[in-house]
Amino acid sequence: MMNIEVVLSPALLHLSDISSKNVVVIDILRATSTICTAIHEGAEAVKAVKDVEQAKALGVQGYITAAERNGQKIDGFDMGNSPFECMNGAVLGKKIALTTTNGTKCIEAAANAGAANVLSGSFLNLDATVDWLVKDGRDVVLFCAGWKDSFNLEDTLFAGSMASMLSDKTACLIDCDAALMSIDLYNLAKGNLMDYLKKSSHYKRLSHLHHDEDMVYCLQGSIFQTVVGVVDTEMKKM
Amino acid sequence: MMNIEVVLSPALLHLSDISSKNVVVIDILRATSTICTAIHEGAEAVKAVKDVEQAKALGVQGYITAAERNGQKIDGFDMGNSPFECMNGAVLGKKIALTTTNGTKCIEAAANAGAANVLSGSFLNLDATVDWLVKDGRDVVLFCAGWKDSFNLEDTLFAGSMASMLSDKTACLIDCDAALMSIDLYNLAKGNLMDYLKKSSHYKRLSHLHHDEDMVYCLQGSIFQTVVGVVDTEMKKM
Image (cartoon, rainbow over all chains, first blue to last red; front, side, top):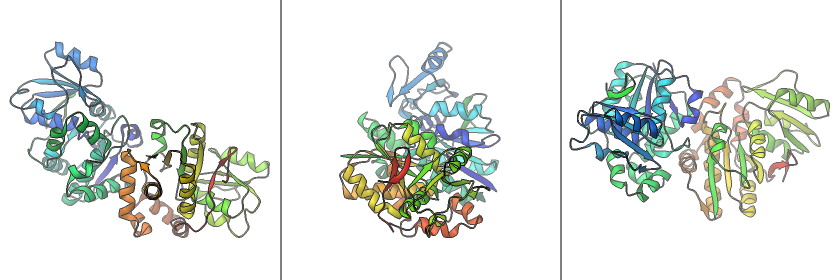
């Protein structure tokens, strides 16, 4: 029986014992969607780092540097945090050092807390990731990055979507109020995720910064089969 | 324009600036429902304290002592945390020192963080409390006590119910994803709150401890008009 738990914010991660479990880090708009896209587009690895300085230092070692804070690319870096920047051969065969406002620190936190595997969650490879988790069989923690430790709607919707799909495909135990809420919220919104999210704080933030295309892209279901997770401290194809 | 925010757990309270706002502490099953009932039943005051020892010490000063941990009354105290213990004249004219697993520490935390007023939230006096908040007009923070810092469904439903009712009665700004989610969840569950909550972790816990009657009681809408909040460090009639 696969136990499914949802963590709604990095500030709540300490309440869950994630050791020896599969943890899916969720920062749908946009870090984990961008990471999945980069690997699918042939990047060798994405190194998720907490600090801008760490990303810069990796640049010296030949990494493409990517940095975003508050939804905006930081000046002096090769990329921001948009999946479109990873397309058309831009990252093929390359390593990327990525730091973002919310998602990248969660990848590090999950790895440090002893997770068996840390995967990058996105709608773009949802089916393939669910199949991987079902085959692996370990308990699953769906870890929402949120916004600066606050709850957000888009990551919660993804958690609900993945929990729902997992429980359709294998015998699951869901004894976690956050997971139950996420599933109900997803069922409410799934007819049109983009429409539902128009009221959310991050939609407004990204829309104001002209990232509407990114959002449309990130909310598409299963357009590729690449499963992405931490392998030897970097995000790679699993 | 009344700004409405929802805090989903005590572990997330530090993210919100609650100073000079009206904070409604929500521990629907059962602390804040019991406090409202006690005051409505004529208790002079309920002193919410964090520690069992503090409650015991107040007993020496003539307070009725009430203590609950993990859903159960603690031996040696006059009461546990059931609203029924406050009925039939048991608390009339008395002061109660109450400590519970989740709710009472939140009352103290909200008061210490400089809230303008700290109210006790319950379905039992929802209409009256909403009217009070609308009349007062300050911004409102709906503060869910949760379960040992984890998100829970019942407090979130109440937050959604109150946010929804406030925005029906006055011009509100709701730019908080947690509040938006709470309202949607409430609209989903409002047809039968008890049925909806049967999947929740705390329903199962309290039902196992034979507190079903308490839950039925606490989920009733607006059976009295008494508004309850902190006055000079104790919960009293506002």
